[in-house]
Amino acid sequence: MEDKKQKAGQIRKKEILDVAKKVFLKKGFADTVMEDIITETSLSRGGVYYHYKNKVEILHDLMKEGIAYRVDKMKEFFEQDTVSLAKNLLGKLILVKKNNELLGGYIVETEAYLGVVDRACHGFEGKLTPKVEALFGKAGTVYIYTMHTHKMLNIVSCEEGNPQAVLIRGIEPVINVERMIENRGKEGILISNGPGKLTKAMGIGDVFNKSKICEIRKKFQKASKELVYDIENIEENVLYIDFENSKTPKNIESSARIGIPNKGIWTEKELRYFVAGNKYVSGMKKSEFKDECWK
Image (cartoon, rainbow, N blue to C red; front, side, top):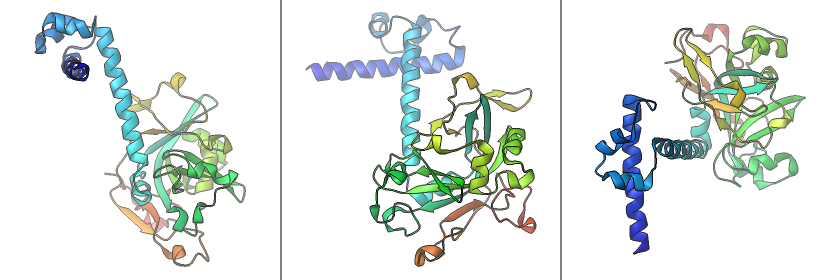
């Protein structure tokens, strides 16, 4: 009996929240009064006030609902199979905050590493060591390792304990390009057309290892058409993705991964994905550059 009563209460609250969402969008939160919401529901005045004393309480629950939804969507995105994630990360806008400045760019090149069966993967045969511990973490965990003094940025995929990940090999710089040039000591495509180059440009190092990727939400200035973020609420040394402002590649091409010799069939497997024609893809020839590579 108690369960049935609780379920009925949840249904009524959902109706109130759904109605309030529409009313807030139509009239704006400031101009909405409780009577506007009550009128649009099937509940009595007392029925609405039983669950919510005022519109602020309603807004609070709507915000919690929105946060829970975004967390679920983030989890779903990173838990997809590694090859799909490697493709779907192309065009995503990644950002970091370093020394109170934002730096960011669109991902243009990735490689998939398929865990215990993949001889080129650090999780091959399931060998867990302190150095690769992050790779065995939850989907969306950042895994950083060093190769020839260069830091390699990887994003863990699949379920926890399944050591698969996507290596970010190249980005098209778009936010605070001047600082990236200064960090790299290089200009043009050399800023970030390689995995070690992009981490140096963005200031990504070991401190990011084992951290969790977060979603960032932008503010858009229509007048200047610039991306503006609330930098005070963005943490240092955390990798963010702006899904809302990401781009879609016109074409995605694939090839064997770079620098994977003597790994049998895994040397030749086409597990490298890139935005066709984007000049920030490593090894892209000038004759292959395209002015329009985004939809």
